[in-house]
Amino acid sequence: MKAFISPTHDAVWTGNAMIRGKLIQHHDRAERSVEILAALKDDLRLDCVFVENAASAPPELMEVHAPDYLHYLETAWEEWAKAPDASFEIRPYITTNRYFPELRTRIPVTLAGQYLGDGGSPLVQDAWVNMKGSVDTAVSAAQAIIDGERAAYALLRPAGHHAMRDLAMGGSHIGNTAIAAQRLSKHFGRVAVLDIDVHHGNGTQQIFYDRDDVLTVSLHGQPENLFPFICGYADERGTGAGEGFNLNLPLEPGTELIGYMKALESATRRLIDFAPNVLVIAAGFDTYRHDKFGNLCIDTADYRVIGDCIAQLGLPTLFIQEGGYKIDALRANVHSFVEGFLAQRG
Ligand SMILES: [Zn+2]
Image (cartoon, rainbow, N blue to C red; front, side):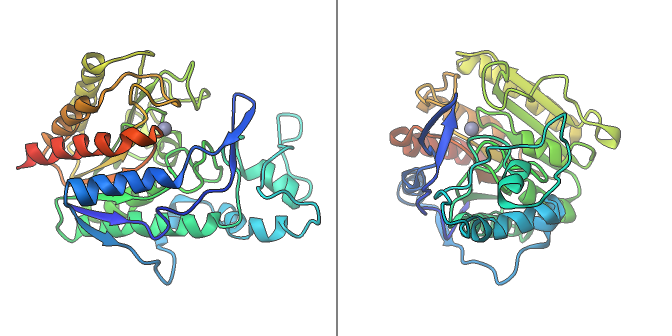
């Protein structure tokens, strides 16, 4: 297995996040990546490819996200900073709503409300550079699978699975997992995405919601009491041609390995039934018992069992980094997970 490391994997994210109304230091800290890289490079001794930025954006970026949204992300900081009293982060404070659904004027304060969907998704000065690094890494890893690698791991930040087609959510602006899946779908046809982050992968779900060639499955904490709250429920099954090609498996707070594996077995049954040619894992480690942003109870040794179960599917497998915020446990958790996967694969 090769690991692909983003050129901005350890970039400092200077923004804050708003969690339950409180502004706190953003949880996507550079140390996360340092710990995960130690697991991949030093503990697992994977062949690490340090990705360089591509000269131009991959076509999948435009296929997954709306042009006006991408234009906003690329230019937002420059426009925002022109105001003499601009804050160091772009944070929405007026949004379109059910009474005023249309933007009457496209200026920095209204555009922030249009495209930044919650308090955890501010934009800062270098955000676009970081996003480009992540996209190039996800696509490089996907291309390696197309070129014959049986497994690859893309280490990038921040997480991308909450990013909708034209709306940032949950600290995700660009859907790295969706972009990788899109690249793979052109070569492999049928692609399955299995999201094991503790939070529902609402962006990946939405991007493929009307498609029957990309199956999206998400195991996550019940959205009644965990972000993103407004979606991630079991009755969201897809629409049009995509009806039946989205599966949400919400888990009760406090679920431990036994309950988790029951849901994972339901997921793998659906995956086998779909018969994909390639698998993308949205690899989040905030299911960990002591992660402050989750509410499940997965322990370090359990990740080995989960990795083993995924490997048993016998598919070419691409791992895209999502969440995991208990920094001092990330190295051990990623090590355990990948080791379980590799042990089963032999
Ligand atoms: Zn998460």
